[in-house]
Length: 124
Image (cartoon, rainbow, N blue to C red; front, side, top):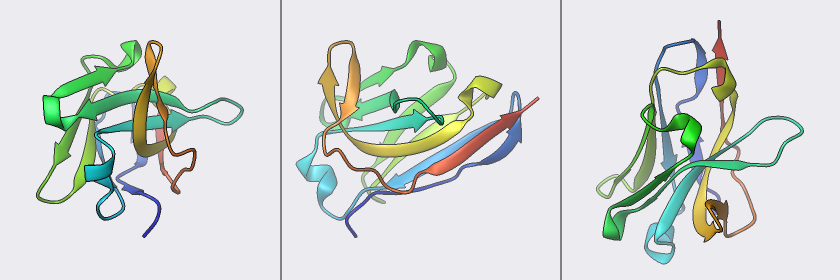
């Protein structure tokens, strides 16, 4: 396994919840201290919606998802999860996880490659 495997997306109505799960490649969580969830809509760049550095219990959230999304790591299962509550139409995107590095006020993918992602579609 080379790429992370994302799952948990779906088609939901506004106000609903989804829980995304990411399984990084074996051993990668120990190499990269920070993992993030990113999303992309057609024609736009990936944006980081949340990131976690488990060793220091530090998290980052995009302003528009603060209070609605929660990122967490499960060491036992080697997964990085994103709980998304009160989903809005503007959350519609394909979601990816990747190791993250700080760039200015946001986080970017440090390995410059993406898994298949998982689609989240929010309807009115």
